[in-house]
Amino acid sequence: MTAVTIPGVDQAPTTHQRLLAWVREVAELTVPDQVVWVDGSEEEWTRLTDKLVEAGTFTRLDKKPNSFYAASDPNDVARVEERTYICSQDEADCGPTNNWMDPAEMKAVMTELYRGSMRGRTMYVIPFCMGPLDAENPMLGVEITDSEYVVVSMKIMTRMGTKALNRFVDADGTERDFVPALHSIGAPLEDGQADVAWPCSDTKYIVHFPEERLIWSFGSGYGGNALLGKKCYSLRIASVMGRDEGWLAEHMLILKLTSPENKVYFVAAAFPSACGKTNLAMLDPTIPGWKVETIGDDIAWMRFGKDGRIYAVNPENGFFGVAPGTDFHTNPNAMKTIAKGNSLFTNVALTDDGDIWWEGIGDAPEHLTSWKKQDWTPESTEKAAHPNSRYCTPIEQCDTKAPEWDDPNGVPISAIFFGGRRATTIPLVTESRSWQHGTFMGATLSSETTAAAVGQVGVVRRDPMAMLPFIGYHAGDYFKHWIETGKSADATKLPKIFYVNWFRRGDEKQFLWPGFGENSRVLKWAIERIEGKAAAVETPIGYVPTIDDLDLEGVEGDRADIEAALKVDVDEWKAELPLIEEWFDKIGDKLPTPLRDEFEALKQRLG
Ligand code: GDP
Ligand code: PGA
Ligand code: MN
Image (cartoon, rainbow, N blue to C red; front, side, top):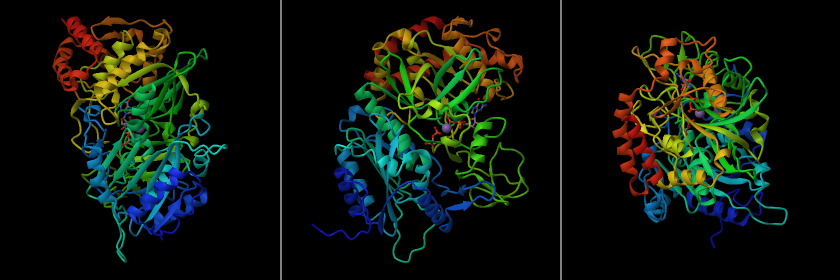
């Protein structure tokens, strides 16, 4: 055996043999200067944020305590769906919405990329836990990374460090399973070579090996590509675990709703990236007497409880929210959360007095430093903040977090919302007829693309259950899993499924629905439908409220616009049918028959 000379590799604060062996193997491949086992302490945070300030990656904010501004490489600002792979052993377990490569072939390619990729850098070993630490079966992972930015971001977004590592080996010595997640920015430093503020590589790979529950990411430092507990583990890998074990890993916020009669309901909602999850999760209701508290803003893990209801857990520990458009009107709770500090801001603009700024936060000052680190004035033609700029902040300091947010049993879900960003066709809210019909709504969900992923913005595409970029296996099998989940349950205990659209537009391109806090009116209607109290009309697409069925007292919107937002336009829906047909053809033989039946029934009803 060759003697390992990499300092730190043997200073492991664990006896977990599989973890020790993997860390050593990665260190020998990537050849970092040293290995550091991350403990998650405040001292460590201070040491790493100081280092990031010194490296020019971070600028300390004078106006927000313990908070930092970062500007990424202009080519590393969003998820890279074209470079994201599901490397299942059998190609038939992937596709048609995922990229696939043979796992052995992919490993051969990436092993060469990782060889020496951490030269001149520190390799950090981050033990983490998705979901509550005191869960009976804690969902463990370890991210190895050569990015300090990733380490401090993971401290906000996950339960990590010593407190997570403590759960790797039980008192009786049993070693628990964990998801190994390897990340390298792919920017080794030769002796004497100066570093840049945001090192990354032009070659990017975000790769999942579903059978091995293994993640390999290379070349990017951006959140969705590099914080591997989030989309990679909690959606792509977890969706495969859910398929195998009978539960659901979904791209959903979770909120707690309390009615004026003090009845409590929990709602989960799936919207594609940058389509309103974080805003709805932190909503400040405009209708008196209703209260919303936050459980999660991005991901829900849903399992059947002993009582036959579906219970949801938020696996995350922080919010990674879209900054532009966030202000005291649209999302006051996010503003209050970040005002407390302890937050990271990436690709926003920086004010001259050391605060952050973005489009939609209020009047622009005379001068800013843009996300591209250039001078910016109100006359500038470019945006000061990147449209996918993000704040990263702990849930712990959100005043409206629900007490249940850290409950390992999760919360019982009464309603599931699917929603997208559509300028036409999709009404403000539609109630499904059944779980199967709701699954059809989810499976045919469509949305305009946003800046959250690299590529053209504003193009309508199918985004099933808002999971298009996140399903870790074949989309047809995923639909089957949804149908079977419904069949396995007592129908009276299943959540009711609704389809919403906050983004329908009028003749002047204006949003027809005021959105944000006003969305509480839609939540109220949905709950009152569950209680059997609210009215609706039956339409070809499902049950839709008339304008009188919604509580609109004091609403901020125009009545004619709201009527238009609620409209079921048969011609628009007929134009939608070929798009659904094309989508189902793409799914192919694996499309479950019940969804084909739902489609035929919809065609019939539209005439
Ligand atoms: P997420 O990525 O799904 O969490 O989306 P966010 O909640 O961060 O919202 C993405 C963008 O949509 C932001 O610019 C928001 O201001 C905007 N947005 C969110 N909710 C609404 C709404 O109800 N109406 C309108 N018009 N815009 C919204
Ligand atoms: P989100 O995704 O837009 O759904 O918050 C974050 C990401 O880009 O991975
Ligand atoms: Mn979000």
